[in-house]
Structure formats: structure tokens, C-alpha cells
Length: 263
Length: 201
Image (cartoon, rainbow over all chains, first blue to last red):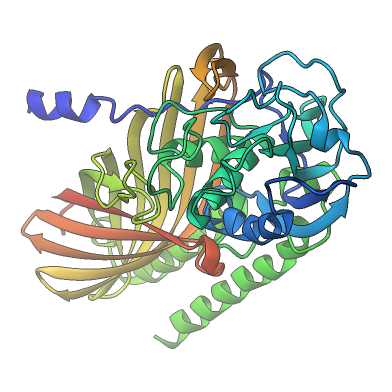
């Protein structure tokens, strides 16, 4: 019996998700748009049309599958940045010190290409990076993902790896840092077969965007964090699903009561 | 959460009310169940290694207790509380999962029964804060350990089957997350052994 209790109290496999900021900042909205940023000058090595097609898979194959997270990432086409600084600017890594070109402010998440060799040193094996999030209070207001356009390293990847790279960078954009576990999408490098999130990733996105009493996936009983604060995007989450779920519950209770009377 | 508890109370109260007219306390509350087992989360949806391996079984110890509330000879309502023991989730981060459950159970015979029910999965992730340097592919960067306690709460549809031998039972219990949203639908399960302490006639 002593042995049994000893086994039961052992901590199980250790994971280690981290955040990319010290305050646990996150997007306030439960639906966040991910767009391709089209610069005035086309990229040299990255096909942004192709990237646009990959974003949907990157969201649906990874972040949008987590039942314990309320975050919904939506591929929302493209928009013109109107600024070649996205393409040529000297920017910085998450956790690093920004220098050179100011980080542009954007709502939601912008994915584009960048060929500045300070960001991607010559012959760099870096495939992409995410700029420090635009944070106001404890809310992330926007994030920019840059794909390495200094060489063909990104374009030479398989489709599956490109999807994983974009999903990894979007992980930074929503507030996550790196994981030390190679099974995690947020591990610092591409692994041969990346098809799902690891436990670290799931814990991280659940920590940042926990669901608030989700009724069988139909919606939240008590509204989401954003709707409780009076926000919400009015597109199917939060309070829009409160009354349908409450009515369904009432119906269940009535059916049960009627069944009881008949027996 | 309050509404879910109300439903659970309604269901239990309905069973209780029927029993009150004919049975004694000990007949309504048939037994106390004590459970121990292992809980596996999100089968086939969690990558476990670099080669694309997925989670099929995980050893996450679980303890729980319940009581069988008799409705008819073959049907009963079983409120249950389970706790997956705290799991370390990295340096200074702990995950705690508590299940507030109610099952309807149908007794097929003296040695097996089927269960259908619902749970509130209260999943708490708590961090102690701090930071660490991690590889970023081009050197290292500083990343941060969570410093707060945050909780997700999911309502699941549960199906289970239990084999029973005298005072003991062995159960395969599943929990279906996001039943109504196919892209987020996920299944967790528990394998558990139970001891039922008979409250007597």
C-alpha cells in the first residue's frame, strides 16, 4: 500500500511552456484575424500567395483544435502594408532589444516577408521570426510575423513544415514563448514530423485563453472574458450563445421531469 | 457553472424525491464508491515525440469518490468527484484537473453496467513566475514562466462501461469535449478501479 501511494504522488512527465512577455499578455478578443501583409515591393524568395493559402491550415491543424482554449484564429486574406519597412526593416526578435526601424503597430496578426540581414544574418538558418507584440496593459493589440526572405530556406521546406513554421510564429504572436520539449510546436526548431500540438503548447494556449464553462462546445455559459468586460466581436462567441445553451438546458430538464412522471 | 450545478442538483433531486416515498435513506444511497486510476487526455491529439507519435495512454494518477443514488432497480444516478493529482508542467508550473460529474447508470446485470453522463472539467494551471534563457535558433532569448493561476472549465459528454465483482469494479470512462463543435471535439479517458462500500439495506 505504501508503494502504491508513493507511485500515485510522483509528479508525471515535466513539460515547460513559457510566455513571451512577463505579464501574461493575450489578445482580448476570442477571434483573432491572421492576414498576409502585402508590401509595395514583392518578396524575393517567399511566395506570399502561397503563404496566404498556408495560414488557414496552420490555424486549423494546430491552434484551433484545442477544446480547452477559447481562442479562434481566422485566416483573413491579405492586406496592403503600404510600407516596405516590413520587407527591408531592421527589427528584432521576441525577448531581444529592438533597434533600427520602429516596430509597426498592427491590429491582429500580420504575416509577411523580410530580407534585412540584421534580422536574418547571412546564410541564416532562421526561417521566420515574430516581432515583439504590441501590448497595451495586459492585452496584445497586434503582432507581426516575418518570414526569412534573405534566402530560399523557407521556400525549400515541405508544405507540412511551412505550415508548422507559420503556426509556431503565430504561437509567439498570441503570447507564447519557446518550449524545451521537442514534442512541442513551440520548440525552437522544426522537427521532422509535426502534425499536432504537444502538451506544452496546449497548456500554454489554455493558460492564456481558457474557456469559461463551454457547454459541449456550443458556447460559454457565462460569456467569455471579453464579453464579461462588455466587449465581444458579435460573431458567434460569448453572449450570442448564452440563451441557446440555457434554453437547451431547460429543455433537457423538462424532458427529464416528464419522463419521471411517466415512470 | 451555476446552471450546470443546478441541472446536476435537479437530476439528483428527482431521483431522491422518487425514492423518498418508498425507500429508506440506506436504500436511496446504495453505496459509497472510492476510485483510483489513470487519466489520459485528448487521445490521438497530442504530439508526444519528434516523429509524430501521438498520446494513446498516459499515467496520470486519479482519485475520486461517488455514491449510487437509486432511481429504479436498474437505473441509478451517480454524482462523482474525481481529482487528477497535480502534474508538474515545467519549472514552477502545476496543472490540476478536477472533475465534477453526474452519470446515469443502467445495470445490465449484477456484473456490469453502462453509464452516460456529463462533467465539468475544471482545469487549473498555476505558475510561480520567473524567467529563463532558451534557445531561439540564433542564440538565446529570455522567456517568461507564468505567474498567475488560470482555470478553464469545459462541459463534457461522458460514456462509460463498468464491470463489477462483489464490492469491486473496473471502469473504462470516456469524456467527450466540444461534442457540438467537430473541429475541437476531443476525447479523454480514465481507466479506474473502484471499491464500493455498501451502505446496507
